[in-house]
Length: 134
Image (tube, rainbow, N blue to C red; front, side, top):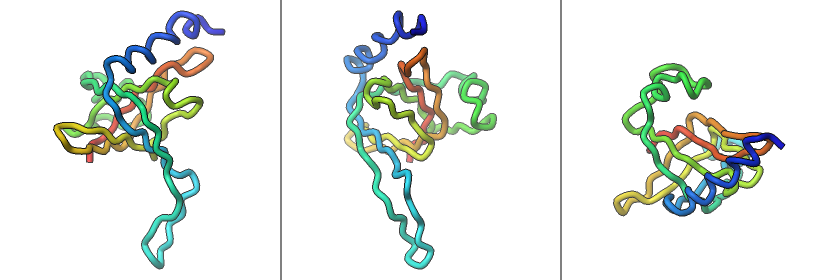
């Protein structure tokens, strides 16, 4: 067991549960298929109820130095950082094909994941995702 697992593993879940908002994590189907004749995509997604915390992006996150899988200056004004307790997704790791739906000012917002950073020891503790609002 990594030191991180013993000391920090129990912290994110209760904090995000207490201070977070209700949301729906949408796991994109891993076996989607596009039909060029009809223009439709087959396959179904799975929706998981979660609690999330929406946080501000720091300048060093916005220029790509922390979330290395994306190029610098990728983020826009409609880009948000979302924290998710790993326990709410089980053994599943977020993917850039997934999205998160939540309510804000009476409207349902959909945030498409563009970058992921998972904090972990031997097991995941928390996921921090950068997502673009549509």
